[in-house]
Amino acid sequence: MISYALRRVLSAIPIALIAVTVCFFILRLAPGGPFDGERALPPNVMANLRAYYNLDQSLPMQYLIYVWRLLHGDLGPSMVIDGFRVSDLIRIGFPFTLTMAMSAFVVATAIGIVAGMIAAVNQNKWPDYVLVLVVMIGVVVPNFLSAALLQLVFGVYLKWLPAGGWVNGSLTHLVLPVTVLAWPHAARISRLMRGSMIEVLGTNYVRTARSKGLGERLVLARHAIKPALIPVVSYLGPGLSYLLTGSLVVEQVFGLPGIGKYFITAALNRDYGIVLGTTILYMFIILALNLLVDMLYAWLDPKVRYR
Amino acid sequence: MAGITGKDAILTDYANKLEKLDAPKGRSLTQDAMRRLLRNKAAMVSIILVVLIVLAAIIGPYFVPWGYAEVDWTSIRKPPDLSKGHVFGTDQNGRDMLARVLQGTQMSLIVAGVATVVSVVIGVVYGAVAGYFGGKVDAVMMRFVDIMYALPYILFVIILVVIFGRNPVLLFVGIGCLEWLTMARIVRGQTLTLKEREFVEAARAGGAKPFTIILRHIVPNLTGPVVIYATLTVPEIIITESFLSYLGLGVQEPQTSLGTLISFGAPVAEVLPWMLLAPAGVLVTLLLCLTYIGDGLRDALDPKDR
Image 1 (cartoon, rainbow over the protein chains, first blue to last red):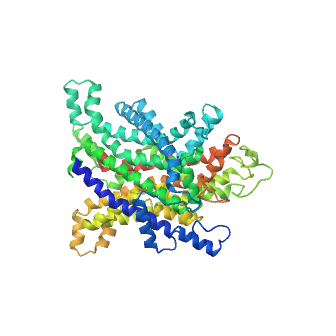
Image 2: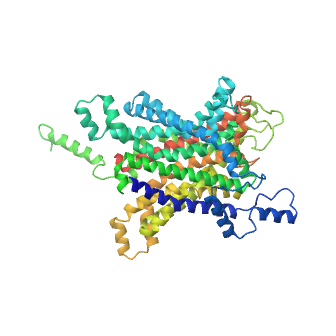
Image 3: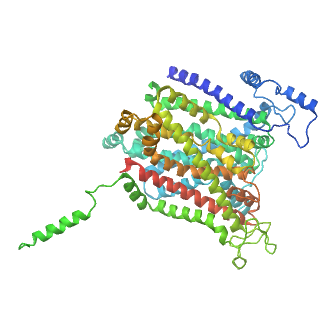
Protein backbone atom coordinates (compact mmCIF):
# COMPACT_ATOMS: atom_id res chain seq x y z
CA MET A 1 0.00 0.00 0.00
CA ILE A 2 2.80 2.42 0.93
CA SER A 3 4.80 1.69 -2.21
CA TYR A 4 1.63 2.12 -4.27
CA ALA A 5 1.02 5.50 -2.62
CA LEU A 6 4.61 6.57 -3.29
CA ARG A 7 4.37 5.54 -6.94
CA ARG A 8 1.18 7.55 -7.40
CA VAL A 9 2.63 10.67 -5.74
CA LEU A 10 5.78 10.47 -7.86
CA SER A 11 3.82 10.11 -11.09
CA ALA A 12 1.72 13.17 -10.20
CA ILE A 13 4.76 15.47 -10.10
CA PRO A 14 5.56 15.51 -13.84
CA ILE A 15 1.84 15.89 -14.62
CA ALA A 16 1.67 18.96 -12.38
CA LEU A 17 4.77 20.45 -13.97
CA ILE A 18 3.56 19.94 -17.55
CA ALA A 19 0.12 21.31 -16.67
CA VAL A 20 1.73 24.45 -15.19
CA THR A 21 3.75 24.83 -18.39
CA VAL A 22 0.67 24.46 -20.61
CA CYS A 23 -1.28 27.06 -18.61
CA PHE A 24 1.64 29.49 -18.57
CA PHE A 25 2.32 29.43 -22.29
CA ILE A 26 -1.32 29.48 -23.39
CA LEU A 27 -1.89 32.62 -21.34
CA ARG A 28 1.33 34.28 -22.49
CA LEU A 29 0.52 33.54 -26.13
CA ALA A 30 -3.01 34.94 -25.82
CA PRO A 31 -3.47 38.20 -27.70
CA GLY A 32 -4.03 41.44 -25.80
CA GLY A 33 -2.88 42.18 -22.32
CA PRO A 34 -3.86 43.83 -19.05
CA PHE A 35 -2.30 47.13 -20.13
CA ASP A 36 -4.38 47.60 -23.31
CA GLY A 37 -6.53 50.31 -21.79
CA GLU A 38 -8.83 52.79 -23.51
CA ARG A 39 -5.92 55.19 -23.94
CA ALA A 40 -2.35 54.12 -24.56
CA LEU A 41 0.07 54.50 -21.65
CA PRO A 42 3.16 56.70 -22.10
CA PRO A 43 6.05 54.53 -23.35
CA ASN A 44 8.22 55.02 -20.25
CA VAL A 45 5.34 54.03 -17.92
CA MET A 46 4.71 51.02 -20.12
CA ALA A 47 8.39 50.05 -19.97
CA ASN A 48 8.39 50.32 -16.18
CA LEU A 49 5.24 48.22 -15.92
CA ARG A 50 6.67 45.57 -18.20
CA ALA A 51 9.91 45.50 -16.21
CA TYR A 52 7.96 45.26 -12.95
CA TYR A 53 6.09 42.17 -14.15
CA ASN A 54 9.21 40.73 -15.85
CA LEU A 55 7.47 41.00 -19.22
CA ASP A 56 10.64 42.52 -20.73
CA GLN A 57 12.51 39.25 -20.20
CA SER A 58 12.50 36.50 -22.83
CA LEU A 59 9.61 34.04 -22.64
CA PRO A 60 11.66 31.07 -21.34
CA MET A 61 13.19 33.37 -18.68
CA GLN A 62 9.72 34.54 -17.59
CA TYR A 63 8.69 30.92 -17.34
CA LEU A 64 11.71 30.01 -15.18
CA ILE A 65 11.06 32.98 -12.88
CA TYR A 66 7.42 31.96 -12.57
CA VAL A 67 8.21 28.32 -11.77
CA TRP A 68 10.91 29.39 -9.28
CA ARG A 69 8.42 31.59 -7.44
CA LEU A 70 5.77 28.86 -7.63
CA LEU A 71 8.15 26.45 -5.90
CA HIS A 72 8.36 29.00 -3.11
CA GLY A 73 4.59 29.03 -2.82
CA ASP A 74 4.01 32.32 -4.66
CA LEU A 75 1.21 32.13 -7.25
CA GLY A 76 2.03 35.54 -8.68
CA PRO A 77 0.66 39.11 -8.63
CA SER A 78 -2.43 40.68 -10.12
CA MET A 79 -1.56 42.73 -13.18
CA VAL A 80 -4.46 45.12 -12.76
CA ILE A 81 -4.85 45.83 -9.05
CA ASP A 82 -1.62 47.24 -7.64
CA GLY A 83 -0.14 45.24 -4.77
CA PHE A 84 -2.85 42.56 -4.95
CA ARG A 85 -1.55 39.02 -5.22
CA VAL A 86 -3.21 35.71 -5.97
CA SER A 87 -2.46 34.75 -2.37
CA ASP A 88 -4.62 37.69 -1.20
CA LEU A 89 -7.43 36.51 -3.46
CA ILE A 90 -7.17 33.04 -1.99
CA ARG A 91 -7.19 34.42 1.56
CA ILE A 92 -10.32 36.50 0.83
CA GLY A 93 -12.31 34.21 -1.43
CA PHE A 94 -11.16 30.66 -0.99
CA PRO A 95 -12.51 29.91 2.50
CA PHE A 96 -15.97 30.81 1.27
CA THR A 97 -15.73 28.80 -1.95
CA LEU A 98 -14.36 25.84 -0.02
CA THR A 99 -17.15 26.02 2.58
CA MET A 100 -19.76 26.07 -0.19
CA ALA A 101 -18.20 23.24 -2.16
CA MET A 102 -17.56 21.06 0.89
CA SER A 103 -21.05 21.46 2.34
CA ALA A 104 -22.55 20.68 -1.07
CA PHE A 105 -20.19 17.72 -1.36
CA VAL A 106 -21.10 16.21 2.01
CA VAL A 107 -24.85 16.76 1.58
CA ALA A 108 -24.90 15.52 -2.01
CA THR A 109 -22.74 12.45 -1.43
CA ALA A 110 -24.80 11.32 1.56
CA ILE A 111 -28.13 11.91 -0.19
CA GLY A 112 -26.87 10.40 -3.44
CA ILE A 113 -25.65 7.16 -1.85
CA VAL A 114 -28.77 6.63 0.25
CA ALA A 115 -31.09 7.50 -2.64
CA GLY A 116 -29.21 5.21 -5.02
CA MET A 117 -29.50 2.34 -2.52
CA ILE A 118 -33.22 2.90 -2.03
CA ALA A 119 -33.75 2.94 -5.78
CA ALA A 120 -31.70 -0.23 -6.30
CA VAL A 121 -33.50 -2.16 -3.57
CA ASN A 122 -36.87 -1.07 -4.97
CA GLN A 123 -35.87 -1.51 -8.61
CA ASN A 124 -38.79 -0.82 -10.99
CA LYS A 125 -41.17 0.19 -8.19
CA TRP A 126 -42.42 3.70 -7.52
CA PRO A 127 -39.48 4.97 -5.37
CA ASP A 128 -37.19 4.00 -8.23
CA TYR A 129 -39.27 5.85 -10.86
CA VAL A 130 -39.55 9.00 -8.74
CA LEU A 131 -35.82 8.95 -8.14
CA VAL A 132 -34.92 8.40 -11.79
CA LEU A 133 -37.01 11.45 -12.71
CA VAL A 134 -35.45 13.69 -10.03
CA VAL A 135 -32.01 12.48 -11.10
CA MET A 136 -32.71 13.21 -14.77
CA ILE A 137 -33.74 16.77 -13.93
CA GLY A 138 -30.62 17.18 -11.81
CA VAL A 139 -28.32 15.95 -14.56
CA VAL A 140 -29.97 17.91 -17.33
CA VAL A 141 -30.89 21.33 -15.93
CA PRO A 142 -27.82 23.61 -15.89
CA ASN A 143 -27.09 25.18 -12.51
CA PHE A 144 -27.66 28.78 -13.55
CA LEU A 145 -31.16 27.88 -14.67
CA SER A 146 -32.06 25.86 -11.58
CA ALA A 147 -30.66 28.78 -9.58
CA ALA A 148 -32.94 31.24 -11.38
CA LEU A 149 -36.00 29.04 -10.98
CA LEU A 150 -35.36 28.30 -7.27
CA GLN A 151 -34.73 32.00 -6.62
CA LEU A 152 -38.04 32.79 -8.28
CA VAL A 153 -40.06 30.16 -6.40
CA PHE A 154 -38.51 30.21 -2.92
CA GLY A 155 -37.11 33.73 -2.87
CA VAL A 156 -39.74 35.76 -4.67
CA TYR A 157 -43.08 33.92 -4.66
CA LEU A 158 -42.94 31.98 -1.39
CA LYS A 159 -40.46 34.33 0.36
CA TRP A 160 -39.11 31.44 2.45
CA LEU A 161 -35.44 32.10 1.75
CA PRO A 162 -33.34 35.05 0.64
CA ALA A 163 -33.00 35.04 -3.16
CA GLY A 164 -29.35 36.08 -3.09
CA GLY A 165 -26.66 38.15 -1.47
CA TRP A 166 -24.65 37.39 1.62
CA VAL A 167 -24.94 38.34 5.28
CA ASN A 168 -21.97 37.14 7.29
CA GLY A 169 -22.72 33.93 9.15
CA SER A 170 -26.29 33.63 7.89
CA LEU A 171 -27.06 30.01 7.08
CA THR A 172 -30.34 30.78 5.30
CA HIS A 173 -28.37 32.60 2.60
CA LEU A 174 -26.50 29.39 1.91
CA VAL A 175 -29.49 27.06 1.53
CA LEU A 176 -30.38 27.88 -2.09
CA PRO A 177 -26.80 28.09 -3.42
CA VAL A 178 -25.82 24.80 -1.78
CA THR A 179 -28.98 23.13 -3.09
CA VAL A 180 -28.27 24.30 -6.63
CA LEU A 181 -24.68 23.14 -6.37
CA ALA A 182 -25.47 19.80 -4.72
CA TRP A 183 -28.37 18.62 -6.88
CA PRO A 184 -26.49 17.52 -10.02
CA HIS A 185 -23.77 15.96 -7.88
CA ALA A 186 -26.28 13.99 -5.81
CA ALA A 187 -28.00 12.98 -9.04
CA ARG A 188 -24.85 11.57 -10.61
CA ILE A 189 -23.85 9.74 -7.43
CA SER A 190 -27.25 8.15 -6.97
CA ARG A 191 -27.21 7.06 -10.61
CA LEU A 192 -23.83 5.39 -10.14
CA MET A 193 -24.86 3.89 -6.82
CA ARG A 194 -28.11 2.52 -8.24
CA GLY A 195 -26.36 0.88 -11.16
CA SER A 196 -23.56 -0.74 -9.17
CA MET A 197 -25.89 -1.79 -6.35
CA ILE A 198 -28.21 -3.58 -8.79
CA GLU A 199 -25.18 -5.34 -10.22
CA VAL A 200 -23.86 -6.35 -6.78
CA LEU A 201 -27.27 -7.59 -5.64
CA GLY A 202 -27.25 -9.99 -8.59
CA THR A 203 -23.88 -11.57 -7.76
CA ASN A 204 -23.37 -15.08 -6.45
CA TYR A 205 -21.95 -14.08 -3.08
CA VAL A 206 -25.04 -12.04 -2.30
CA ARG A 207 -27.19 -15.02 -3.24
CA THR A 208 -25.05 -17.19 -0.95
CA ALA A 209 -25.43 -14.72 1.89
CA ARG A 210 -29.20 -14.74 1.44
CA SER A 211 -29.42 -18.49 1.13
CA LYS A 212 -27.56 -19.06 4.38
CA GLY A 213 -30.35 -17.11 6.04
CA LEU A 214 -28.97 -13.62 6.56
CA GLY A 215 -31.64 -10.93 6.86
CA GLU A 216 -31.91 -8.44 3.98
CA ARG A 217 -30.54 -5.64 6.15
CA LEU A 218 -27.44 -7.62 7.10
CA VAL A 219 -26.87 -8.69 3.50
CA LEU A 220 -26.85 -5.03 2.47
CA ALA A 221 -24.68 -3.84 5.35
CA ARG A 222 -22.11 -6.67 5.35
CA HIS A 223 -21.88 -7.73 1.72
CA ALA A 224 -23.42 -5.30 -0.71
CA ILE A 225 -22.51 -1.74 0.29
CA LYS A 226 -18.71 -1.82 0.20
CA PRO A 227 -18.29 -3.30 -3.29
CA ALA A 228 -21.14 -1.17 -4.62
CA LEU A 229 -19.31 1.95 -3.44
CA ILE A 230 -16.32 1.45 -5.76
CA PRO A 231 -17.67 3.32 -8.82
CA VAL A 232 -19.02 6.03 -6.52
CA VAL A 233 -15.60 6.54 -4.95
CA SER A 234 -14.00 6.86 -8.36
CA TYR A 235 -16.43 9.69 -9.10
CA LEU A 236 -15.80 11.57 -5.84
CA GLY A 237 -12.56 13.21 -7.01
CA PRO A 238 -13.89 14.55 -10.32
CA GLY A 239 -17.12 15.33 -8.47
CA LEU A 240 -15.46 17.53 -5.88
CA SER A 241 -13.40 19.37 -8.48
CA TYR A 242 -16.62 19.84 -10.45
CA LEU A 243 -18.23 21.33 -7.33
CA LEU A 244 -15.26 23.64 -6.75
CA THR A 245 -15.37 25.01 -10.30
CA GLY A 246 -19.19 24.88 -10.42
CA SER A 247 -19.16 27.01 -7.31
CA LEU A 248 -17.73 29.85 -9.45
CA VAL A 249 -20.99 30.04 -11.38
CA VAL A 250 -23.25 29.69 -8.37
CA GLU A 251 -21.34 32.43 -6.55
CA GLN A 252 -21.77 34.71 -9.54
CA VAL A 253 -25.52 34.00 -9.80
CA PHE A 254 -26.24 34.47 -6.09
CA GLY A 255 -23.78 37.33 -5.59
CA LEU A 256 -21.66 35.50 -3.03
CA PRO A 257 -18.13 36.59 -2.07
CA GLY A 258 -16.09 33.56 -3.20
CA ILE A 259 -13.27 33.23 -5.73
CA GLY A 260 -15.71 33.01 -8.66
CA LYS A 261 -16.59 36.66 -8.79
CA TYR A 262 -12.96 37.76 -8.76
CA PHE A 263 -11.93 35.17 -11.31
CA ILE A 264 -14.54 36.13 -13.88
CA THR A 265 -13.83 39.85 -13.44
CA ALA A 266 -10.11 39.16 -13.76
CA ALA A 267 -10.62 37.15 -16.96
CA LEU A 268 -12.67 39.97 -18.50
CA ASN A 269 -9.99 42.53 -17.57
CA ARG A 270 -7.31 40.25 -19.02
CA ASP A 271 -5.65 40.14 -15.63
CA TYR A 272 -3.44 37.22 -16.63
CA GLY A 273 -1.70 37.15 -13.27
CA ILE A 274 -4.89 36.30 -11.38
CA VAL A 275 -6.20 33.97 -14.09
CA LEU A 276 -2.96 31.98 -14.22
CA GLY A 277 -2.59 31.78 -10.44
CA THR A 278 -6.18 30.68 -9.87
CA THR A 279 -6.07 28.12 -12.68
CA ILE A 280 -2.88 26.61 -11.28
CA LEU A 281 -4.31 26.56 -7.76
CA TYR A 282 -7.39 24.66 -8.97
CA MET A 283 -5.24 22.30 -10.95
CA PHE A 284 -3.19 21.42 -7.86
CA ILE A 285 -6.39 20.84 -5.90
CA ILE A 286 -7.77 18.56 -8.62
CA LEU A 287 -4.53 16.58 -8.81
CA ALA A 288 -4.45 16.21 -5.02
CA LEU A 289 -8.06 15.04 -5.01
CA ASN A 290 -7.39 12.48 -7.72
CA LEU A 291 -4.46 11.15 -5.69
CA LEU A 292 -6.65 10.87 -2.63
CA VAL A 293 -9.32 9.01 -4.60
CA ASP A 294 -6.71 6.62 -5.99
CA MET A 295 -5.67 5.79 -2.42
CA LEU A 296 -9.27 5.21 -1.36
CA TYR A 297 -9.76 3.06 -4.43
CA ALA A 298 -6.73 0.93 -3.61
CA TRP A 299 -8.05 0.46 -0.10
CA LEU A 300 -11.49 -0.63 -1.34
CA ASP A 301 -10.24 -2.84 -4.16
CA PRO A 302 -6.93 -4.62 -3.42
CA LYS A 303 -6.51 -5.67 -7.07
CA VAL A 304 -5.71 -2.05 -7.98
CA ARG A 305 -2.55 -1.96 -5.83
CA TYR A 306 -0.75 -4.66 -7.78
CA ARG A 307 -1.41 -3.43 -11.30
CA MET B 1 -53.02 -34.72 -51.50
CA ALA B 2 -54.71 -34.03 -48.21
CA GLY B 3 -54.80 -36.95 -45.80
CA ILE B 4 -57.80 -37.98 -43.77
CA THR B 5 -56.74 -36.27 -40.59
CA GLY B 6 -55.68 -33.06 -42.33
CA LYS B 7 -52.20 -33.50 -40.85
CA ASP B 8 -50.54 -32.43 -44.11
CA ALA B 9 -52.52 -29.19 -44.24
CA ILE B 10 -51.46 -28.35 -40.71
CA LEU B 11 -47.85 -29.12 -41.47
CA THR B 12 -47.92 -27.02 -44.65
CA ASP B 13 -49.40 -24.16 -42.67
CA TYR B 14 -46.70 -24.52 -40.10
CA ALA B 15 -43.97 -24.62 -42.75
CA ASN B 16 -45.39 -21.47 -44.37
CA LYS B 17 -45.46 -19.73 -41.02
CA LEU B 18 -41.86 -20.68 -40.35
CA GLU B 19 -40.84 -19.29 -43.72
CA LYS B 20 -42.47 -15.97 -42.94
CA LEU B 21 -40.55 -15.61 -39.67
CA ASP B 22 -37.25 -14.02 -40.47
CA ALA B 23 -35.31 -16.13 -37.99
CA PRO B 24 -33.36 -18.16 -40.55
CA LYS B 25 -32.45 -15.04 -42.55
CA GLY B 26 -30.60 -13.47 -39.65
CA ARG B 27 -30.42 -9.80 -38.86
CA SER B 28 -27.48 -7.45 -39.07
CA LEU B 29 -26.31 -5.64 -35.95
CA THR B 30 -27.62 -2.33 -37.26
CA GLN B 31 -31.09 -3.73 -37.93
CA ASP B 32 -31.08 -5.24 -34.48
CA ALA B 33 -30.13 -1.94 -32.91
CA MET B 34 -32.74 -0.03 -34.95
CA ARG B 35 -35.41 -2.49 -33.81
CA ARG B 36 -34.49 -1.99 -30.17
CA LEU B 37 -34.37 1.78 -30.57
CA LEU B 38 -37.82 1.81 -32.20
CA ARG B 39 -39.19 -0.10 -29.22
CA ASN B 40 -37.77 2.47 -26.75
CA LYS B 41 -40.69 4.89 -26.32
CA ALA B 42 -38.78 7.59 -24.44
CA ALA B 43 -36.08 7.69 -27.10
CA MET B 44 -38.56 7.75 -29.99
CA VAL B 45 -40.59 10.58 -28.48
CA SER B 46 -37.33 12.44 -27.85
CA ILE B 47 -36.16 11.98 -31.42
CA ILE B 48 -39.45 13.35 -32.75
CA LEU B 49 -39.29 16.32 -30.37
CA VAL B 50 -35.67 17.13 -31.29
CA VAL B 51 -36.47 16.92 -35.01
CA LEU B 52 -39.41 19.28 -34.44
CA ILE B 53 -37.25 21.72 -32.47
CA VAL B 54 -34.50 21.65 -35.10
CA LEU B 55 -37.01 22.19 -37.93
CA ALA B 56 -38.68 25.02 -36.00
CA ALA B 57 -35.30 26.66 -35.39
CA ILE B 58 -34.38 26.46 -39.08
CA ILE B 59 -37.61 27.31 -40.90
CA GLY B 60 -39.65 28.77 -38.02
CA PRO B 61 -38.26 32.31 -38.33
CA TYR B 62 -39.72 32.60 -41.87
CA PHE B 63 -43.23 32.02 -40.54
CA VAL B 64 -43.11 34.30 -37.51
CA PRO B 65 -44.55 37.71 -38.38
CA TRP B 66 -41.82 39.50 -36.40
CA GLY B 67 -38.03 39.53 -36.86
CA TYR B 68 -35.83 38.67 -33.89
CA ALA B 69 -34.42 42.20 -33.74
CA GLU B 70 -37.61 43.97 -34.82
CA VAL B 71 -39.31 46.30 -32.32
CA ASP B 72 -43.09 46.41 -31.98
CA TRP B 73 -43.59 49.86 -30.43
CA THR B 74 -47.22 49.17 -29.55
CA SER B 75 -46.50 46.18 -27.33
CA ILE B 76 -43.53 46.45 -24.99
CA ARG B 77 -43.22 44.08 -22.00
CA LYS B 78 -46.52 42.42 -22.97
CA PRO B 79 -47.52 38.88 -21.95
CA PRO B 80 -48.36 36.31 -24.65
CA ASP B 81 -51.07 37.75 -26.92
CA LEU B 82 -52.30 35.79 -29.93
CA SER B 83 -54.17 38.64 -31.60
CA LYS B 84 -50.95 40.58 -32.24
CA GLY B 85 -48.96 37.49 -33.17
CA HIS B 86 -46.75 37.51 -30.04
CA VAL B 87 -47.24 33.89 -29.00
CA PHE B 88 -44.54 34.06 -26.28
CA GLY B 89 -45.06 37.75 -25.43
CA THR B 90 -42.52 40.55 -25.91
CA ASP B 91 -39.40 41.71 -24.06
CA GLN B 92 -38.58 45.14 -22.58
CA ASN B 93 -37.68 46.43 -26.03
CA GLY B 94 -40.88 45.20 -27.65
CA ARG B 95 -39.18 42.36 -29.52
CA ASP B 96 -41.20 39.22 -30.16
CA MET B 97 -40.09 36.47 -27.78
CA LEU B 98 -41.06 33.63 -30.13
CA ALA B 99 -38.80 35.03 -32.85
CA ARG B 100 -36.02 35.49 -30.33
CA VAL B 101 -36.39 32.01 -28.86
CA LEU B 102 -36.29 30.50 -32.36
CA GLN B 103 -33.19 32.48 -33.27
CA GLY B 104 -31.60 31.60 -29.92
CA THR B 105 -32.30 27.90 -30.40
CA GLN B 106 -30.77 28.10 -33.85
CA MET B 107 -27.62 29.73 -32.47
CA SER B 108 -27.32 27.22 -29.63
CA LEU B 109 -27.73 24.31 -32.05
CA ILE B 110 -25.16 25.72 -34.48
CA VAL B 111 -22.45 26.20 -31.86
CA ALA B 112 -23.21 22.80 -30.32
CA GLY B 113 -22.94 21.17 -33.75
CA VAL B 114 -19.64 22.89 -34.54
CA ALA B 115 -18.07 22.01 -31.19
CA THR B 116 -19.32 18.42 -31.28
CA VAL B 117 -17.96 17.81 -34.78
CA VAL B 118 -14.57 19.24 -33.77
CA SER B 119 -14.41 17.19 -30.59
CA VAL B 120 -15.49 13.96 -32.29
CA VAL B 121 -12.96 14.35 -35.12
CA ILE B 122 -10.06 15.08 -32.76
CA GLY B 123 -11.13 12.44 -30.24
CA VAL B 124 -11.57 9.64 -32.81
CA VAL B 125 -8.33 10.29 -34.64
CA TYR B 126 -6.32 10.77 -31.44
CA GLY B 127 -7.77 7.72 -29.70
CA ALA B 128 -7.48 5.47 -32.75
CA VAL B 129 -3.86 6.46 -33.36
CA ALA B 130 -2.91 5.97 -29.70
CA GLY B 131 -4.69 2.64 -29.50
CA TYR B 132 -3.45 1.32 -32.84
CA PHE B 133 0.23 2.11 -32.40
CA GLY B 134 0.26 1.21 -28.71
CA GLY B 135 3.46 1.02 -26.68
CA LYS B 136 5.39 4.25 -26.10
CA VAL B 137 3.24 6.30 -28.49
CA ASP B 138 0.14 5.25 -26.57
CA ALA B 139 1.74 5.92 -23.18
CA VAL B 140 2.82 9.45 -24.14
CA MET B 141 -0.46 10.31 -25.88
CA MET B 142 -2.66 9.07 -23.05
CA ARG B 143 -0.49 10.75 -20.41
CA PHE B 144 -1.17 14.01 -22.23
CA VAL B 145 -4.90 13.28 -21.95
CA ASP B 146 -4.44 12.71 -18.19
CA ILE B 147 -2.77 16.11 -17.92
CA MET B 148 -5.56 17.81 -19.85
CA TYR B 149 -8.04 16.17 -17.48
CA ALA B 150 -6.31 17.86 -14.56
CA LEU B 151 -6.96 21.31 -16.01
CA PRO B 152 -10.11 22.91 -14.63
CA TYR B 153 -12.60 22.91 -17.52
CA ILE B 154 -14.63 26.04 -16.77
CA LEU B 155 -11.50 28.08 -16.12
CA PHE B 156 -10.09 26.99 -19.45
CA VAL B 157 -13.28 27.87 -21.26
CA ILE B 158 -13.15 31.36 -19.77
CA ILE B 159 -9.54 31.67 -20.90
CA LEU B 160 -10.68 30.69 -24.42
CA VAL B 161 -13.29 33.44 -24.28
CA VAL B 162 -10.52 35.90 -23.49
CA ILE B 163 -8.49 34.63 -26.44
CA PHE B 164 -11.24 34.37 -29.07
CA GLY B 165 -13.29 37.26 -27.81
CA ARG B 166 -16.54 37.83 -29.59
CA ASN B 167 -16.54 35.34 -32.44
CA PRO B 168 -18.95 32.62 -31.32
CA VAL B 169 -18.06 30.08 -34.01
CA LEU B 170 -14.30 30.30 -33.37
CA LEU B 171 -14.99 30.17 -29.64
CA PHE B 172 -16.84 26.90 -30.03
CA VAL B 173 -14.18 25.42 -32.26
CA GLY B 174 -11.97 26.14 -29.25
CA ILE B 175 -14.40 24.51 -26.85
CA GLY B 176 -14.57 21.48 -29.14
CA CYS B 177 -10.80 21.33 -28.75
CA LEU B 178 -11.31 20.87 -24.99
CA GLU B 179 -14.13 18.32 -25.20
CA TRP B 180 -12.40 15.48 -27.01
CA LEU B 181 -10.67 13.89 -24.01
CA THR B 182 -13.34 11.35 -23.01
CA MET B 183 -13.97 10.52 -26.68
CA ALA B 184 -10.27 9.77 -27.14
CA ARG B 185 -10.27 7.46 -24.11
CA ILE B 186 -13.31 5.51 -25.30
CA VAL B 187 -11.98 5.19 -28.85
CA ARG B 188 -8.54 4.08 -27.63
CA GLY B 189 -10.06 1.34 -25.50
CA GLN B 190 -12.14 0.06 -28.42
CA THR B 191 -9.19 0.23 -30.80
CA LEU B 192 -7.04 -1.85 -28.47
CA THR B 193 -9.45 -4.77 -28.85
CA LEU B 194 -10.28 -4.13 -32.53
CA LYS B 195 -6.67 -4.21 -33.68
CA GLU B 196 -6.26 -7.82 -32.50
CA ARG B 197 -9.15 -8.96 -34.71
CA GLU B 198 -8.57 -11.10 -37.81
CA PHE B 199 -9.75 -8.57 -40.39
CA VAL B 200 -7.17 -6.05 -39.20
CA GLU B 201 -4.48 -8.72 -39.37
CA ALA B 202 -5.66 -9.61 -42.88
CA ALA B 203 -5.44 -5.97 -43.93
CA ARG B 204 -1.95 -5.75 -42.46
CA ALA B 205 -0.91 -8.93 -44.22
CA GLY B 206 -2.31 -7.48 -47.43
CA GLY B 207 0.15 -4.63 -47.07
CA ALA B 208 -2.21 -1.82 -46.04
CA LYS B 209 -0.51 1.19 -44.42
CA PRO B 210 -1.30 1.95 -40.74
CA PHE B 211 -3.38 5.05 -41.50
CA THR B 212 -5.37 3.23 -44.17
CA ILE B 213 -6.12 0.49 -41.65
CA ILE B 214 -7.17 3.04 -39.03
CA LEU B 215 -9.46 4.96 -41.40
CA ARG B 216 -10.87 2.02 -43.40
CA HIS B 217 -11.04 -0.80 -40.90
CA ILE B 218 -10.97 0.58 -37.37
CA VAL B 219 -12.91 3.85 -37.44
CA PRO B 220 -16.02 2.37 -39.19
CA ASN B 221 -16.23 -0.19 -36.39
CA LEU B 222 -16.29 2.58 -33.80
CA THR B 223 -19.59 4.05 -35.03
CA GLY B 224 -21.62 2.83 -32.04
CA PRO B 225 -19.69 4.43 -29.18
CA VAL B 226 -18.93 7.53 -31.25
CA VAL B 227 -22.60 8.14 -32.07
CA ILE B 228 -23.61 7.62 -28.44
CA TYR B 229 -20.93 9.90 -27.14
CA ALA B 230 -21.62 12.60 -29.73
CA THR B 231 -25.31 12.65 -28.78
CA LEU B 232 -24.29 13.17 -25.17
CA THR B 233 -21.74 15.86 -26.10
CA VAL B 234 -24.33 18.08 -27.79
CA PRO B 235 -26.27 18.84 -24.57
CA GLU B 236 -23.00 19.39 -22.72
CA ILE B 237 -21.92 22.04 -25.23
CA ILE B 238 -25.36 23.65 -25.17
CA ILE B 239 -25.00 23.95 -21.39
CA THR B 240 -21.48 25.39 -21.73
CA GLU B 241 -22.71 27.90 -24.29
CA SER B 242 -25.68 28.90 -22.17
CA PHE B 243 -23.46 29.26 -19.16
CA LEU B 244 -20.98 31.52 -20.99
CA SER B 245 -23.79 33.60 -22.44
CA TYR B 246 -25.34 33.73 -18.99
CA LEU B 247 -22.16 35.30 -17.66
CA GLY B 248 -22.26 37.74 -20.58
CA LEU B 249 -19.24 36.12 -22.24
CA GLY B 250 -20.95 34.33 -25.13
CA VAL B 251 -23.24 35.42 -27.94
CA GLN B 252 -23.75 39.19 -28.21
CA GLU B 253 -26.82 41.34 -28.97
CA PRO B 254 -28.84 41.57 -31.18
CA GLN B 255 -27.90 37.95 -31.88
CA THR B 256 -29.08 35.72 -29.13
CA SER B 257 -28.90 32.20 -27.77
CA LEU B 258 -30.89 30.24 -25.23
CA GLY B 259 -28.36 31.13 -22.53
CA THR B 260 -28.45 34.83 -23.37
CA LEU B 261 -32.26 34.79 -23.31
CA ILE B 262 -32.29 33.06 -19.92
CA SER B 263 -29.76 35.52 -18.52
CA PHE B 264 -31.98 38.43 -19.63
CA GLY B 265 -35.11 36.68 -18.43
CA ALA B 266 -33.88 35.65 -14.98
CA PRO B 267 -33.56 39.12 -13.39
CA VAL B 268 -37.03 40.20 -14.57
CA ALA B 269 -38.77 36.85 -14.08
CA GLU B 270 -40.75 38.28 -11.16
CA VAL B 271 -42.69 40.70 -13.39
CA LEU B 272 -42.21 39.23 -16.87
CA PRO B 273 -42.09 35.45 -16.22
CA TRP B 274 -42.62 34.54 -19.89
CA MET B 275 -39.18 35.97 -20.67
CA LEU B 276 -37.57 33.28 -18.51
CA LEU B 277 -40.03 30.43 -19.01
CA ALA B 278 -40.05 30.42 -22.83
CA PRO B 279 -36.31 29.94 -23.40
CA ALA B 280 -35.95 27.79 -20.26
CA GLY B 281 -38.69 25.45 -21.47
CA VAL B 282 -37.01 25.00 -24.86
CA LEU B 283 -33.60 24.49 -23.27
CA VAL B 284 -34.78 21.88 -20.77
CA THR B 285 -36.84 20.01 -23.40
CA LEU B 286 -33.89 19.94 -25.77
CA LEU B 287 -31.46 18.75 -23.11
CA LEU B 288 -33.82 16.10 -21.73
CA CYS B 289 -34.55 14.75 -25.21
CA LEU B 290 -30.90 14.60 -26.23
CA THR B 291 -30.02 12.77 -23.02
CA TYR B 292 -32.84 10.26 -23.54
CA ILE B 293 -31.70 9.71 -27.14
CA GLY B 294 -28.14 9.12 -25.96
CA ASP B 295 -29.30 6.65 -23.31
CA GLY B 296 -31.60 4.93 -25.82
CA LEU B 297 -28.80 4.58 -28.38
CA ARG B 298 -26.51 3.16 -25.71
CA ASP B 299 -29.09 0.56 -24.74
CA ALA B 300 -29.79 -0.26 -28.39
CA LEU B 301 -26.16 -0.58 -29.47
CA ASP B 302 -24.81 -2.28 -26.36
CA PRO B 303 -24.25 -5.94 -27.32
CA LYS B 304 -24.23 -6.95 -23.64
CA ASP B 305 -27.97 -6.30 -23.33
CA ARG B 306 -29.06 -8.77 -26.01
